[in-house]
Length: 308
Image (tube, rainbow, N blue to C red; front, side):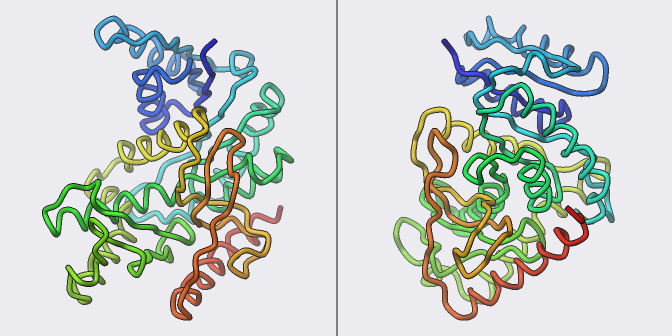
């Protein structure tokens, strides 16, 4: 029997993720959206590609949650997207209501699922889902660090004209302007990146990674990124479905790790069948630790504004 993955939100991120999961044959997929006909139409379109791409996953579109029952993983992408000039923080109040309502429904039908939160502002929406679901912290995870790290690795690979798989990196902290790319832990085929890229240029690449989402929003004019976010979410889904024990940077609820308590912050975690199986604590320099604390303070502002 195939696993079941529900994706809530049939916009660009959600629909592309549903397509990626189905095409891999990893699980049957339920695509949910409040817009009548939208998830059904996209699901049918994806399903009709199955004979060509030769996958057997079943994709169901729905405006209600009955079809999501007993999902192994539920990915929440629902919410309004950023528009040019809009910060992630501007999305706070609207998306709090949306994510809270969605979480109530998915928990009702899939009480044992692992929740992956993609809606922005990411770190704050993780708090909403955790509070509403009452799930243990290992089963409510935010997708941000994988995406931020993918952007950082992309820019380093482009700079050095090397294969992306040779670049290893971690980006920690909140999903936004205060994220913390750990250049000290960044390497290319095992060679510290500082030996290959001058500090001034590396600082520019770090800043471009921080601005990665905003850069795409400014280029698209009428939307935000979805290819890289959906691919990043797929990596997390794969790690959980197949109990791969991948070490990935994800938003996790810290309870004292890194000296931070009660906040969702991006850190390296071990992802397996039960969700987060371990939070990996790496040693940080005083400057790195201060940057992470600054990022946590930015997340705290959002959480305080939520009035949970």
